[in-house]
Length: 153
Length: 153
DNA sequence: TGCGAGATGAAAGATACTTGCATAACGAGG
DNA sequence: CCTCGTTATGCAAGTATCTTTCATCTCGCA
Image 1: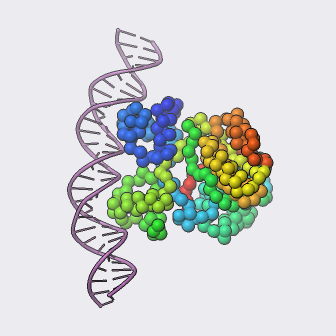
Image 2 (image 1 turned 90 degrees about the vertical axis):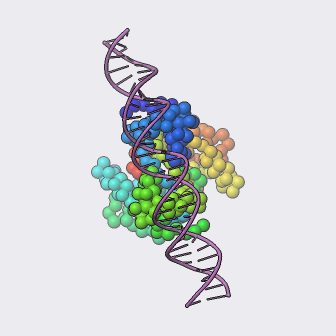
Image 3 (image 1 turned 120 degrees about the horizontal axis):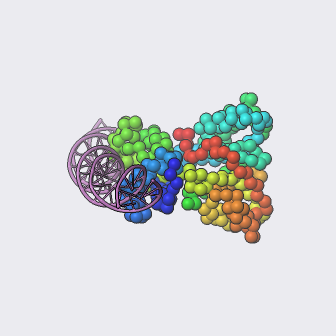
């Protein structure tokens, strides 16, 4: 995997703001022809530098107004138990983000749901029924101060 | 703002996975012509249902391998103090996500940085120097189990 | 100096996007 | 029950963008 040069970074800076910018326009901004821009984008996609190209949807506009952050602590922390928990969280459609972390908690989840009762249902499926969870702490978001992935590159 | 019908939701389901799917292809999937698909996408952009269309970049590929979740507790919780903190976090390029939450903490931040010393520098700018922060708790991500925004619609 | 790998830009061809227009569906009001 | 106005739709044509090809260039290295 070839390292990224300053052209690649300049292209990424544009694409992470708006990936529908025409290649011609990107080329003008970075001093490269449109085909060159395209080849670099393709290479970065193949290398996994660009993970996906997506539309970001406002959750409240599609009936999912609740964002909840959850700290999860496991009972058993054997590798198998941790892998099982990871798989469980990965497969849950309500889970937007999940991090395995150091510190007092084992996992931090960002969950988006339609209502509190939907969240209650989620906790039952995820944290009870032999789920190896010692305890979990719920923090309800009262406001999305900042969202998205705008890397500082 | 017109409510979303099942066509809109079907289009969103496709776009949040891959927004470079051709409109013709989307049209075939949802039983609509390409121009209709386009008009619906434009309307949802104008209404703010679609917030942005972006490329998702792998942080570690651009020299930002550290993801850190921070719980922040303020000293003063007057509206002015809270707004000041929000503005501070919003303006910091290292902050990817910031939620104002209920519970023991006031804010949850997701911070992406190049190194621990970059994080230390960040904490000095954000949490010291008269920043109205009583305490903050750092949790370093040992693994991104799941990332992104794939709403369950 | 000469070679080879890799990247580049110009141009042509293919694909996708956009617009104009006539028609059809839906509601509100007579 | 009908008519009208509003809105959404598909088709077709025009425009812009993307993609491929190919000749050239650059750079590292022998």
